[in-house]
Image (cartoon, rainbow, N blue to C red; front, side):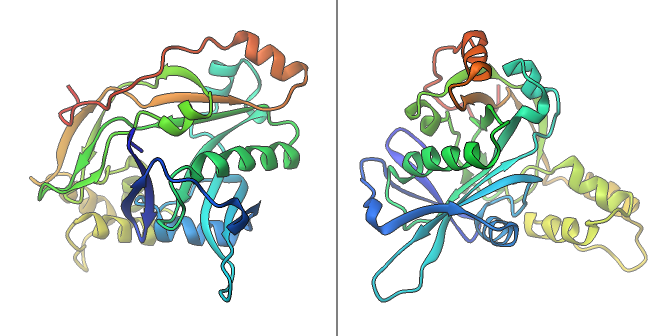
Length: 278
């Protein structure tokens, strides 16, 4: 999301709607989602085509006259990639926190629909998992381009979180990322599944092909294939300053009050990073 536009997803491609649009809440409903529905929706529409290890899932249902009700958005609250982030930022055990791992809305959802959906998704999360008091989320400020020059992901400062009065906790660790020809980040976990012949290697291989990688030859081992991929001249190494980190505190109990007292929200960032990452 930018300050003037709200990002949506459709079949893996980003689309934008005016931020000033107001959602007609009588046409939408927020409900718990099944694992199967959330996974299918996320892998179909999110640009990464990936699905995290979910602890709870919520769907935004679009209700239209003379039409079947359909999922128009999904929020996936997942296990953080690093078990130390919840204790580090919130001061509570990892089990008491989740990550907003995916937040995907279709183009039919009006501009301010995400803040309306997110507030209700957080409420359902707390009802379903009362021990969860902290939600961490990340906003990636680094724009990405495909090798042909098309923007595949603009930089995001976390406007939706700022609109929700979320605490800004600073930057995650800086790192160097590798961009595939498609502009997608070449994930080390994806490469590892192929390199080590692990479970999920077939899907990982399909992801690489979608990113623009060449096909694997019949006699090529997984390790040899990954080694060849990493020598591609089309790969680009970019320095990433670190994602913006945001935190939600759920509930009004003693734990929530202690977290609020401990958090020190910093001034909100307002501009995306330069594409060079410098």
